[in-house]
Each structure stands twice: as C-alpha cells, then as structure tokens.
Amino acid sequence: MNKLIALSGVFLFAFILVSCNGSDNGAGKPGNKAENPEGLIVVGFSQVGAESDWRRANTRSMRETFTREKGYRLILKDAQQKQEHQIAAIRDFIQIKVNYIVLAPVTEQGWDSVLEEARDAGIPVIIMDRMIKTLDDTLFVSWVGSDFRREGGMAAVWMEKTFKDKKKLKIAHMQGSMGSSAQIGRTEGLQEGVARNAGWQIVIRDSGDFAQVKGKEVMERFLSKYRDIDVLYCENDNMAFGAIQALNEARLPYGLFGGLKIVSFDATRAGLEQTLARNISYNVECNPLHGPRVENIIQQLQLGKTPNKIVYVDETAFSADTITQEEIDARAY
Ligand code: GZL
Image (cartoon, rainbow, N blue to C red; front, side):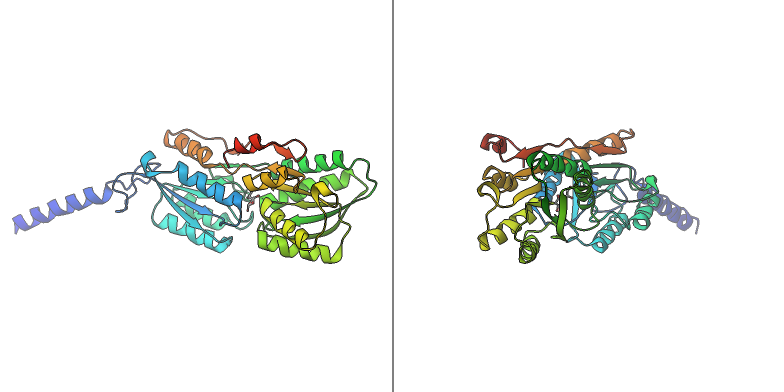
C-alpha cells in the first residue's frame, strides 16, 4: 500500500512539473500548448482582408518580417473586411494562448469587449494601420499607422494650389470603407479644405469600400448625374482604377487631356504608374510596410521595455507633373 501511495506521489509531482512547464504565457516564452515545441514567439495577426494593393503589400510586409527563421510563428487570419470575423479571430488567438495579438481593425468602433478579454488573458495587443475608438487605453500596448487627416490635408493643399484661379470647384468624393480611420481622416482633410474655400462644392459623394469593382460602379453613378466634375477625390488607388475604367468606357477626358483631375491615396506601385501616365494627377502616400515597425514594438516588449503608445509613419505625396520612373522603381512597394 505504501509503495502505491509513493508511486502516485511521483506521478503527481511529474504531472505538476510538466503542466507548469511553459505555462507562463509571457512575451516569448512558450505557452502551454503542444504546437510550439521550438519556443517560437507566436503572433496572431487579424488582417482586414485583401481588398486592395495596399492591403496585399501590408500583408506581405508582415509575412516577410515574422518568419520561422527569425523565431516567430505568424498566424494570419483574413477577415474579408468583416469585423465579426476579426472578433472571432482574436478569440481564437486567446484560446490558443498566442504571445502577441496584432489587429488591423476594419473599423474604429466596437473593440472594447474582445480586447478586454485579450488584456485579461495577459496577451499584449498591437493595433496596426487603422485606429480603434476606445476610452480605455489599457486595451492596446501600441498603435502604428498613418496620419490620415494629414494625408487628406496634403491633397486639399494641392487642390488649392492647382485650382487657385477657379471660382467654382465641383468635387466628386469617393470614400473608402465607412467608419475606417483611413476614410474618416481623409474625409476630414477634404472637409477642412471645403471650409477654407467658399468656391468648393462636393456635388456628390459615395463609398467604393476601397475596392476597384465598387469604385467603377460608384463612378458610373457619379457620371450618370454629373458630367462637369472638376475633381474626383478618391480615397485609395484601387477605387481610382475603377473610376478610370468607368471614364474610359464613357469616353470622357481626364488627367492630362483635360476634363476631371483625379486625386488618389496609397501611392502603390500601380497607383504611381497611373500618376506617371498622368491619369491620376496627385497621389498621397500611405506606407503599408508596417512589419518591421510591429516587430520593433514586439522586440521592445520582449526586453521588458515600454514602446511608444502612438507611432506615426512618415509619408509624402507624388504629383503627375514631377514624378519619374526612377522614383517608382526605387520604391519598396
Ligand atoms: C490605409 C488603409 C486603407 C488603404 C486602402 O492605411 O487602411 O485600407 O488606403 C486599404 O487601400 O484598403
């Protein structure tokens, strides 16, 4: 009998030893999950979708940064632009006890509840690209992305310079995914321009959801109502590509050959090629290469440091009058 008690004590001790091993889900230590034998840093990444060239460049940057060779396991979930998919993905990441959660939020609202669950599970959350609206800044460790209102402001200043002699300026406004920081900020930038310029009028507005197909449909609707638009203020390149398709099909002039001027955002390679061709007149950069920036935040956390809460990326803009092929060829995306 004594031998039996002794033997069960040994098994009990062994069991406790094994189940406590790696149970600390602190940054970088292997969580208590079988699928991480090499002790990789497991990063759960909830991505908006694959709706645009910008988004695909952003995903590429994350994949190229968080490689197994560098000690990471990246679990990427594409939300097809649906917030409920992102919330489910975050819950999955909590369930499998990832070391970090990276969220590129499709919209600004509605994150408190699921991010409270992540915080309470002790998993640091990094917000990337667009921002979330919350009163509780303990819900995320750091945010890295663009100043979208500044981007819109740069476009508005270009419009002021370009059309300074025009008493009346008729603007068609194609917005991105409604409620996203990129749409909110770029729209604010335009609205501030309208407030400064009494002759500016937004004659029509609709959302193309940052996608080319929808952008073409929206532009067709714009053209069915207005043929004397001076500027199309288009909140990303892919919608601008759709608008160009609609203009070509309607055989309407634009860009270099007179007619409406297109202002776009993202400055993706394809967008800059269209700018060089003078189809897009002005293109404001929105840098998608956040992989290294997110890694820098994670490395700081690994070392027990406190990263900056807000990290804006530097961005510029390109005009059809001055851009060169060499400039485009030298860019990373
Ligand atoms: C901007 C990003 C936007 C891009 C679009 O940071 O959120 O989403 O401008 C993308 O191309 O779809």
